[in-house]
Image (cartoon, rainbow, N blue to C red; front, side):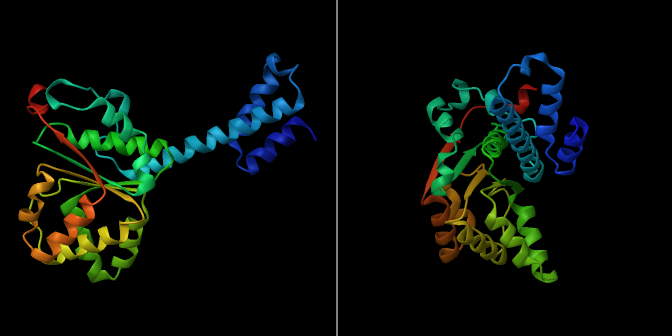
Length: 242
């Protein structure tokens, strides 16, 4: 079998990482003295890395982050926002996903809550985990409409399966009883299946008053706060400085 035949087979099998590595081996004298098993290992590792890259790219597209340039490496600690470096570093390791813990980020408008949430989402994607970003009220409206066209079960299942669900702008506008029931149903399904990241101006201690529904409020707040980590951002609006 010729080298070109091998290339063609790799293309047909969609082994793009191995294809690129084989080209590298065939054009560089550095590989000429390598043992066969070492060259084979190089091909296998290249394919593995290529697949990991494609997976991360796919997960990133599917997440639909609001801030697509958010990067955990750009997080600035200290200062007026009072971010705890050790806490942030621990959360970025994503170990809390293993226990399906939740993360609750609160703070005034413009303090960087959404950007920080996207950073945690990017960290999850880099670990190969699935993420979905939504603004809370538009998602609840989508769920309301899905009841009418019969797609609610499919939508809910897709939301339950995701490793990290980011709900932004929680508490920014009132929601009716049907929306509260949809939210509870969603959180109940996710309680042992994935982590939820809540972003909003309200402190979790204010959620009962916001939800204003004795039974539903208790159930929703309990599912979000029972196993959770909290970040309260402080300081003036960062938007005012732009």
